[in-house]
Length: 166
Image 1 (tube, one colour):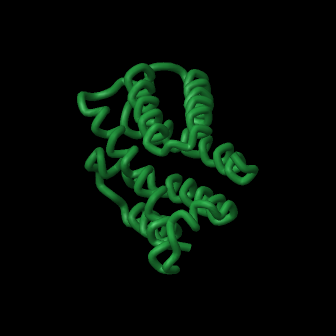
Image 2 (cartoon, rainbow, N blue to C red; image 1 turned 90 degrees about the horizontal axis):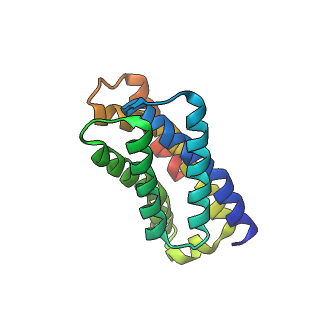
Image 3 (cartoon, rainbow, N blue to C red; image 1 turned 45 degrees about the horizontal axis):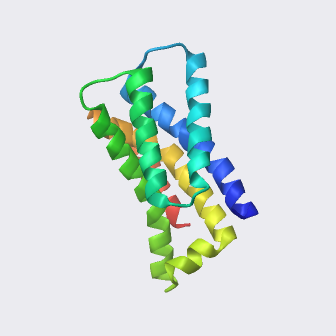
């Protein structure tokens, strides 16, 4: 891994770990005290960073899905559809990571490999994807729970989606 890739992994993985924990907090009820969830966050980050070094996207997605499922199963009081919720949230995360690359390559008529090999663009896109995830996880949780979506959340979500493109 290059220096930019390491910086990207070590800055975005903790943010995504935080997003996953906050998402599960909204969907499920916690079983244990707060201190336990700091350990869960650290464990999620450590395992995720370890597997990201192999640079195999499907393996990363599988590991994150397994981590979400195990965290949901052991640390939260869940309902019958927790695997569906976690899978939907993982698809949302993958969508947020893929969409900017596809759009930039289409607008600039550039090969996707050229974008993915440019370290600075990759770093900036990774940071913007994490910020977009921070802005959108609440909206996705409310959609899954079929709660009333307030205007401010809808506006925040639209701004987050537009933010991906810039």
